Length: 308
Image (cartoon, rainbow, N blue to C red):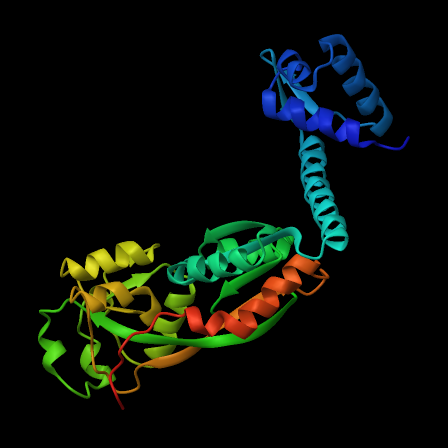
């Protein structure tokens, strides 16, 4: 097999994205005949078909999809190389990609904005998603670092703690238990709970806190994949929830959500900054990592918690 070039990879990606030779040829600014010849030579060279030809459109075969996957990774690495070389030329410039777990989005923008003001020539790309999304980004090394609660055990990462992450039981302000002090954990087992989806960090905290307690299955009756929707459901009176205190700062301050005084609460977890272990951070990523460790705690929401 002759050496495959970047041009070959660009050809396969363009045809896959556009569906026809003619459309891909327009994008690449070459003739359709030249593109057809290029694909045929490539398929002859590698010995497998990269496209299924049916109905006037070209669809990737399994082998073709692998080519596109590799091409995407190469594009990402080339962008990383460009940013790294730029950063070595100018220590105050470069590019850094940061993944933000959805629970961290309530303070991450302030943190990132402060870093950006101090590093005006650094390009910053932000990905916000649930735990599965951020773990996948760390696995694929599509982010330089991430802000999250639990570092993933399933991905080789380096992590450090930069601040506390309290977990509380939240209820609508008119709930009868808001007037109680020192609620026992088992008093909550008959309450209708609104919980995050399985696999999320918040759901993991819920399962850990109520482990061994015979909850009423029918009362754990709403499962939602968004902190915002969980909060709206609590405010609507649909139930109570175990949630990060840092996600309800505004609602508690405005009196739209109340924190129950429960024995054993708040459960104090930690915020971590995480990066792929196999990837040496660029100067820009290293600068953000250091900034988070030195200043990140100061951007965490301030919320009054029950005094124990």
